[in-house]
Length: 538
Image (cartoon, rainbow, N blue to C red; front, top):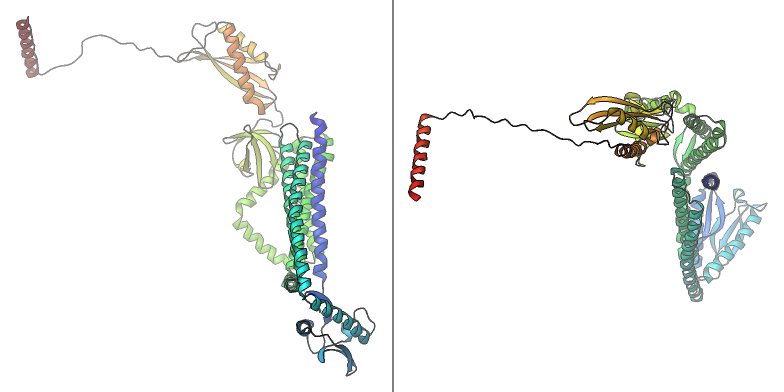
């Protein structure tokens, strides 16, 4: 039954990782056009609606022209006058005039879809008329009343959809939990926690997107709020796309940095997914040890991340040769400031290649005893018998003594001291102990169990039972089971297990106490007085 449930867990985990990779790449591609936008054009908008874009000319920049045109059009909209828009020729250039006032001169650089500046001017005149008429109509009381009612309806629908998302999320979570139910194991618990976290993140993201979309939609219904939203959006985009620093001959903005971070994050996730596939699909079938599989997978993961980072930086446009001096200085700083990290990283490389400990080994380091779950670049994760994860720095495994019960050969011997009462038949005791050991299924037949006569104790005759096992991580429950069998075997053969006892011997005699002559005389007088008083009473 357990084998049949393993495959869905693996497939579900791989599906989650693939989804994350696709989302990361999608975000990167969506952000790429923002980076590519040119700054030589500036937008002209009426009440937050884009009308057209103007370029720079010999007299002014694009943004200055756009600001002037926006202010003129906004004044026309607020005046409630019917717009009178014309195209005039001045100095062999078409000029757009609104209500007798100069608006802009259409130049060759402004041509977008038309062939000549005159054709472009006529197209813009039509767009300006439509935008002004629509803006003036949206300032009427009827439009505001209808739009307010529509906004209330949209908010109520959003509240209902918000709750519906919660119900759907609960149903999906219950279904996924039923799919992932199996025996208790660390891998299953990890998949369940990951799925629960991702489902919760998806629910929160969906609700945030819902309310952001509703807010933006309602904001765009009203002219004033639409203009505010448009101005804020333009400023945010301008802030994200404006260069903040330069490396070499190229300038970088916040968007460039964010794209690089997203790409590096996608690289790490992709490297982890590829490593998991390598471990589960290829290395698992080679029948090499689990420790060797983990070492190969980790080396491939870090090599893939290092090589991929260099390739991404080159594609991103960063000249790595210009960072040689900076990298050297950082290397010196890291060497002095992060000595422990560098030491643990070097120790991790030694552990991966030398392999004194491997994943799956049962080890004892200091006061901790458990199974090695993971060997990383900085630390080793040990899962104790109490199912507690202990994170130990790599350098500790090279600086101190480590007991590895599974190194090369998992067969090991455990010692079980036993004491019996004086007067017991020692040969019968040996027979009882061996009989208890051979009845345990985890005790190996070869080498055979042995019983050693350790000596005469204070209150018992001391023996030691030695047995061999090939599951060192289960030595504690095996010892407990064998002690239960020993107690039953000793009771079966009427052999007494003593309790600690002490014999106290007291000797009688005169106390070597000497009294002074004065004290002796006083005691004699007191005795005579006591005797005389006693006789008189009689």
